[in-house]
Length: 262
Image (cartoon, rainbow, N blue to C red):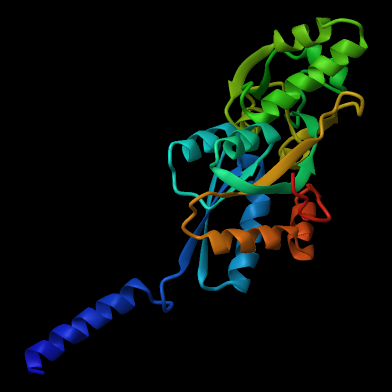
């Protein structure tokens, strides 16, 4: 090899090493997850990468309905975690997701700003709020919120309460994080979110009566044709492991004892 050829080879070797300073390129594991799973899945990703150093977990968070649409349109994903069965079932029925199982459960609360300007002390006090924020009907937290209001109305023998509360809704958001942000920014007197999104110190929590509350069921499934199908199965196993359940529980989720298939 000539001196010039050796120099070129050395430069190319350095360039390759510069692209992958940690050694061989890690295989991405693309996880599409409901926005309410953000904090829990970020912690889980760190633990998973520690156990699987050849894998790079790429997390994409949004409302379940948005993620479903993206998968239907061909977005590259390996795992889908939905905050309700509706969007998971649609993808399963369309042959786009398989192996679905229950990941965890959640429930609703009302949140208000720390100063609580509307004086919301109970679920019934929502009729006193002037500015309420909920999710859109297509986002799981919005559907659950409407169901909770319907249950209270049905128990009272009519829908007056639900109509009064919905009449005070000033904004409908596409994810639970956007719903919470409205309260944190002082743009709403109250909002209905998941218990896991009620961060102490940033908002105050008002309980939803057990008779009206809705137990949200989170589902995990593998995307058909995934580029990292083996990694997707490992993630599902990790989520169902004692460590995965501990992380979910630490973030307020009611973790399943097993990854129960649908």
